[in-house]
Image (cartoon, rainbow, N blue to C red):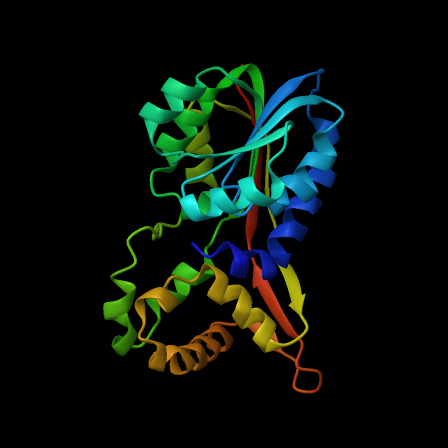
Length: 267
């Protein structure tokens, strides 16, 4: 997930999820003027700039997007940075940096399709709590079940040695109750938590595969001559586990996923 050009061409599902979540929740949040807002896991910056900022622009003084990928942040700075919007390299799991640079700084924290990649979720939430002002709110939209991580569990043996080399991927899955406990443990009062199965339709399987390749670091680890065979294996396993359905007539590929949205406040 370190190629911003590839990611930004294939993140339609992330864009739609962010827009839908903001449409449903933005008016449920309490707003004043000149707020300072954080977007955690901003990636290449397009969702921050093109989707989040338009929802907020009348109420904020500054929007800061952070990501731990240097490549993503440099791309975001180049193409989307401006006086109202800045991008910084920050690992939300790093308590020292979060506390020293951003303690009690933000009125709101947003995060879209990032939190399921985080290893230390309680630690990340504690950092967000520290970074928020009293009365500040968070709105986080992430995958309750990460289909890519689940897929790795069922890969044939020949691929397992490459999977083991992927260090940054969170391999833990949690129930809603477990996640609720994490937010409460970090000091948040949950206003709303919801999770429902959703679908996203790709025009064809190759479009879906491009979306997978944009986030799947297996392609970095694998020798290039294995890429096509790996892609075929991914397709077979996705269909076997009923993660996708491919229309035999049109080729449209329907992807099923389970997001969870949490709106919470720091009292």
